[in-house]
Length: 195
Image (cartoon, rainbow, N blue to C red; front, side):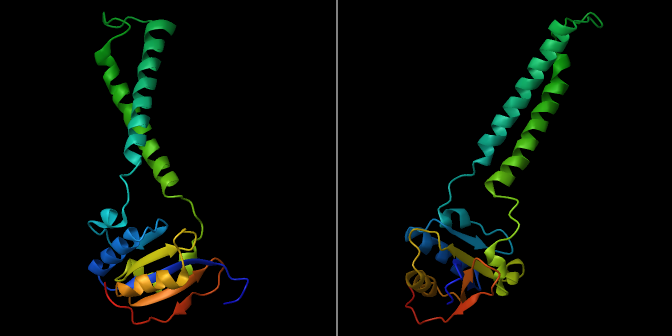
């Protein structure tokens, strides 16, 4: 490996979802934190296999909805009750039933904006390029193959140990991906014992 190449991640390919889930469980149990799975469809139980906590998006959306509700309530109270009180049809300036449509609309608006912005933030989007796309085999992740990528920034990462761990769960192909635009470096598979 040339000195100017900086490894970014180790990419292992699997043929079936059970082997992928088993690989994620092995990495989780070994203490790896900086790894991800890539599948052509959602795989039930993958969050638990990877040891992922519940999404932070729910509380963020709730806070956004509460902010929208509060904004609407204060806005209507100020406009109709204080700034420009106007009695229409005998209704008092501060009438809860007339507030419901605006309360609902601003709650939904703020919730949806928070959901989109929160999703962008939590998924680190936009990310214009990821080293994983240096692998020519990774195109199959949207077709019929399953992948696990382990970041070299993980404190537990050791090329030989991580490679042996992935081999032990029957990966069919393994590559070392670099940070630059160079092609992935194929690593030969050993004969690790299944565990």
